[in-house]
Length: 294
Image (cartoon, rainbow, N blue to C red):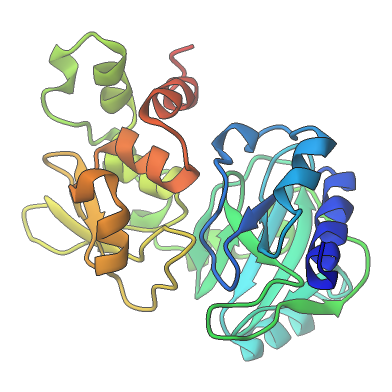
């Protein structure tokens, strides 16, 4: 085992001991190198983690989970500095530098949705976030800036007091359009796949579980765009499309498109499997639970 691999393993086990699931990613990449979907709400055994990190790789963490991990992802240092000034009681919480800004780590008691608040990505449960000592695809090193304990909050309002005012009503997870829009035709199907698609539209999944906000790109409410939710795609401009009428989506980036199942547009099951590294059968089982069907 190389020295760098040993460092990664030590960091992974340190997070594991905090109740956070560590996930290996390909070197200098945000792409997970193992199927991690089953570990969104629980921890693997320690031997599995040791095996995962036995060779050189990057380190990502699953948000939410047993540790109730919440990460505020600031794309700009100036925004993080402003947040520290406005939230002095939380300024000492564990924080790492990212390629362009900072990751602020917190524990949150109340269930929280992932969202974007004025350029701050709120990464709640079922997300991957890169962690030290990973290397960003552009060569930047993730590293601690505040090496204190992870501070606890009750709800997101404790860290972003006015987040509800700062998030447009149409983009919240509670948006009536996003949560109530169903995949046409799914109501006629009584099998488990049809029930999943009827209860969890592609738009609802993207907002609730992929942490992105679809933006309408056509007047008829059919077409949407958003940033690609793939952990391996640093998407500055929206390059992910969604056809709400057909309930399918995909990414315009050739590398992402090639990595999609058979290179074709994805329904909500394909999308979940693609993002979590699960097979279709595993994705169906997981989505059935998320949709309250079992």
